[in-house]
Structures are given as structure tokens and as C-alpha cells.
Image 1 (cartoon, rainbow, N blue to C red):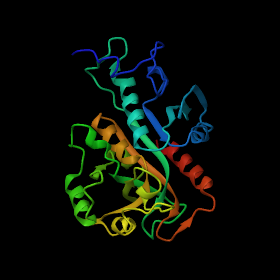
Image 2: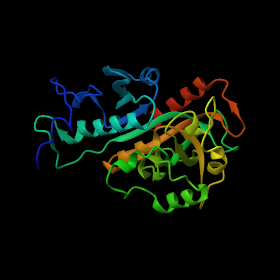
Image 3: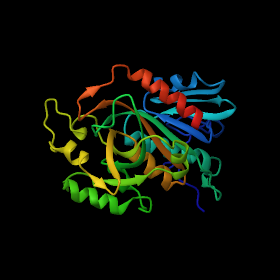
Length: 286
């Protein structure tokens, strides 16, 4: 196998992956991903010890132990473009030799858990509850820049495109299922399809000074059904996490605190407390 070119795999002179600024020894096999930089320390304050603290740009990493288990917490920032960086670089850390720049013949599998906040798209998905993303539907288009469609739920995706009469001028949606092994850890929680938007305002149906090109977006998402599945919430990272993570052979799962209900049009009065409870439960189950 030929070595990867320097422009494809960017490594610093200290043998760290470029954007995350991490060495191979600085990450655990179980990784919690969060969007907010401050949420990294909000989680790691529960660790019994912290071995590494690294920050570069919006990417903050704390690696330590919780009740004897090694865990990393990494902030991604907002959006699928950042997830593209984080997942590819985490995979490179465990599956590419940085001295030879050759891909390892034996691949390592990571467990990638995203803990996030989101807005509900169903009246019965209440504020200050949690939702486990059994599936993620991406409106970001990121998956279409990569070869390989074996992890995409084609039948469900086509059903949504037909139901929504999805405009051809927008990126084609894609749906990916979470990893069964990680879903099993969070049995008993409400499951749903999570919609991953490519922005916070018009891509999620919000209007300030510019009108949305999809004025009935919430209705189309709210009324979609595929067997027992329905679209339950909006966020901005899970579809890319599921597609890239699983395409590279890793396990992926998102659990979101519901801090707003777009149908009832209400917001959490104390979302930080809800997130705190989610963190504690996730640490126990990971």
C-alpha cells in the first residue's frame, strides 16, 4: 500500500493530527462528542482523574478515567463540516501509522457518543426529556461527497423524499441508523429519527429577515412516518457522525436533551440542569 500524501494526512512535526492537535496516546476507545467547548469540562469534572487536556481552535479534548474506565470528551463545534474533521482525524489517530503514513491492516473500532441539545418536532416529545437517535436524517449533503452507500437506509430515505416532495435544488437527504451495540446501552429511552440541519435558521425553518424557501418544513417533518418511525427532533451533527463513523468501522450514537419544542413553541426554563442529568446518566452507561 502506498503512503498517504502529506496534503491528504496533515500531521504536525510533533506527530499530532493537525486540527485536533492530538497524539495517538491522548484518546480513549470510548469518546463523548459535544458541540460546546465548555461542555467538555462540564463532563470531565466528574472524572476521577484527567490525564490530558488539549485545545486547538474549537476542538477541546479532555481524556481521563471515570470509575476506572478511560474516556475522552471532545468538542466539535457546530455543524457537519466540523464533524467531518473530527471523525476523520480520530480514525486517523487509531488506524493510520503516522511514521509511514500507511493505513493499518488491522483496524481499531471506537465508540463515539454524541451528547447534544435539540428542539423537538413532535408535540409529545417534551421539553427537558431525552431522545436517543435511532436514525439520523441528513440535509447537509456531506455523505454524498464520499463513496459508499451501504450504511444508508435507502428505502426510508426514498420514502421521506417522496413524502416531503424534497426540492431538487437542495442536497439530497440520507438516513443512517445508529449502532445496535450502543443503542442497547440506552434501552428504555424514547427513540426517534433525528433531523440534522445544515444551519440554525432557515435550514431549521426559522425566519428572521430572510424568508425560508421551505415554509412548511416542520409540517413535512412532523407528519413523516415509516413503519413505527417518525422524525422527532432537530440538531446539526448526527447524520455526519453516523455516516462517517460507521463507514470507517466505528460505533456511533447520539443522545439529545430536548430544550425546546418547535410544535408547542416553548423552551426549557433550566436546560443546563437537564443537560447535567443527561451527562451523569451517559457516564454511567458508557
